[in-house]
Image (cartoon, rainbow, N blue to C red; front, side, top):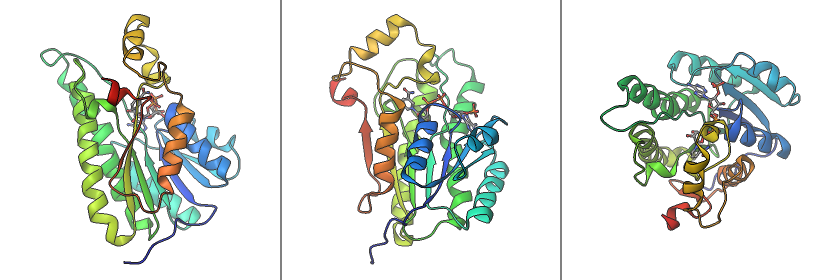
Length: 245
Ligand code: NAP
């Protein structure tokens, strides 16, 4: 097989979950490199927010759990820019609860966003992606290790890890790479509601002794996106959480 190059600047990115947190940091990292980025999130304000990031950014409001919305979104990007080079699935939600007590609606919503969502976006983006394309999925340590009270989230992220491997195998012949970046415990809105005590207990398990910052995860995603001999890989950017557990 030949060696498809990572496309030259400006690459065309679609980043889901880009209204804040890790997804926003990834979008800003790619823009800083000179790429074009379509920022995707549910909030209508995403279009105006993207405008403020410069003329290489655009924002499209779409719910990743709705196949028709993400299909329209990817079609719009392709119509505007001629294709998609990099897709980052960072949109996610966290719902907790012990196995006997969490609401089944929380299970459904978590799987719909964190697992079915990336599938819908991949299926919508693929017709517009060519050789050298790259997909980065954002996983979680809970997809690999058991944390009490995290059935919904853990199952969704373990599923995403499995999906990543299968897609990597399936899409390699088309010259499209698929990898999973796994953040540890990162300061974002998703973790902002955790009590000080619980936060300290988690940080105590992190060998580097601190929470991560969204920019640190973005750096890893940017590097993985352009690593031309990497597919089906799981890249932990977790301060050592996996090895310290
Ligand atoms: P966050 O600050 O809560 O941001 C989540 C993003 O996803 C927002 O932009 C949100 O925008 C978007 N989103 C949520 N549901 C969506 C949907 N149905 N359709 C489209 N967009 C949706 O969370 P984060 O910490 O940056 O998390 C980003 C990713 O990293 C997630 O996949 C998360 O599971 C993963 N992760 C985070 C941590 C951590 O410690 N923070 C650790 C491991 C993994 P709207 O609300 O505007 O739609």
